[in-house]
Image 1 (cartoon, rainbow, N blue to C red):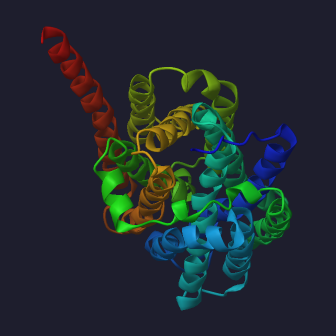
Image 2 (image 1 turned 45 degrees about the horizontal axis):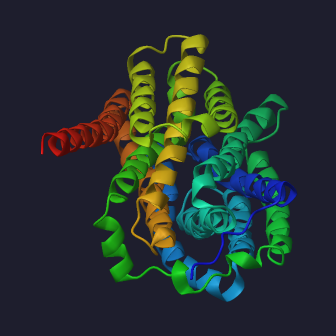
Length: 398
């Protein structure tokens, strides 16, 4: 007999979101790596290599996160590996020049962020009913996006105060350490997340998930991760080439992503998820068109960032719920693990290609590549809507 899904108090979930925000600052600071490495004589390809090193370690993080959750509990597993986020931020700030040490700290970043990003939604899924998942996923992702967007803004604030860009990494490390302590304390209050081995990923569960409709949101989050990772990781280079202030992008994107998730996500997730994902991924595609061809000044730059924030931010919330709810019975945790893995491949793997494209072919070619990825992402939603319509019409005629 299935157990009733426990309910979460507002105070407890608020503390959980605060801790998530603080940990996310360390990942957000990595969007300054292109600027930091450039000041040390490197280029965008070097920055992409460091970011993509994290992709390798996230595979390990996804594979072990379920076992860690069963052993320590999800919250304390996040706290333990959150220390790696602290170490990575300190390492980026303190390592001189560019070399293998930066790649090593990239690996630490992937391990820490991978465990946190994977187990966070699993904690949420264990605390709320399936009908509430999309709403609470939106609140969690909004908190994380706030931290991610705040990271680069720390760098802009440091610059305005005449401080080196490394100051942002030191501040991110301090904030993440506080987040680690909060998650450790949450461990005793979130014992319900210590579920049996349902969180462990197996080959059987993987084939079940990938053989179901959940495969579509999993593919979409990977493509969306490519768009987000490609644009955000090299936004300092994009802005410099157009004599713009990169903080406008992160302010616009963060404000739009957060406000849309907090204010209208509850409405959006109650709509038809296929239609919603089609509309929102279309908005994301429109933002890339604007980045590629329409940004001429600060206003158009801010508009493109806001469109991306709303489109990407809400699409993520919708497809996160789809991945959980379209997975076969008993495989929700595995579907969320695979969802996270696909996201990591996009957000950490694509910057390596993006950096190489910028160095060898220029920013314009990168924008066209990102545009093609966004178009493919949108075409999946169109295909699903068309297939559903054909299926309904076929059923009615028969």
